[in-house]
Length: 226
Image (tube, rainbow, N blue to C red; front, top):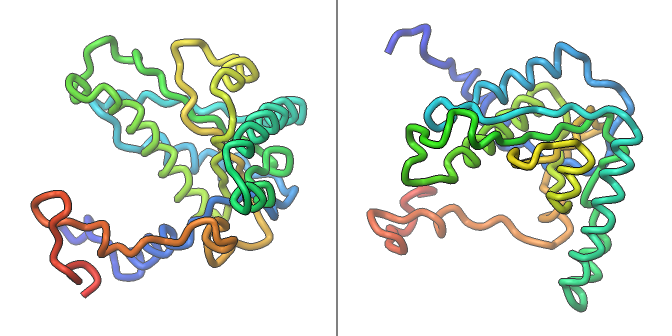
């Protein structure tokens, strides 16, 4: 490998730190606007994501107007009430206590969409797994999330909305699939643990329990973490 193609130990450490310290941010947004050059870098990171057949199926809708944010918040409120009713007892009480969006607080929102027919009906690499364009767009979301963290921006993915509401509010054509609605902005701090882990909703699983050798379910104990 050419030396210029290699990452230094410091560069590797920064990448792993960014991955480790990424958080799904729903609170503590500051009112400071995201500078255009910072947003451009973050969007460029999303556009650099891998995509099946080099399809690049994504579009990015940047949302700043308060009226649009309010409409999206109203859609979230309706969906969240429906979701809360699906849980019972202590789980329902805990669910209602969670902060699950920052749609009105974040200085900007970003909707990432997937244009499934951008390259026509037959796409290299999608011939047998038709969802690969969706997965490619999710890769763009992850790139955006990590780039935003490197820029000290908090990002939160708001998934508790009906897709029909996203189509209506953001004038997304029927053939385009909304993939992610993201809150984005500077925050006063990043939590040390994910909110859902901190509040006791879920614990992080042990990596060793998730890694198999050769066949699903077959593992060598301690093969990953030693």
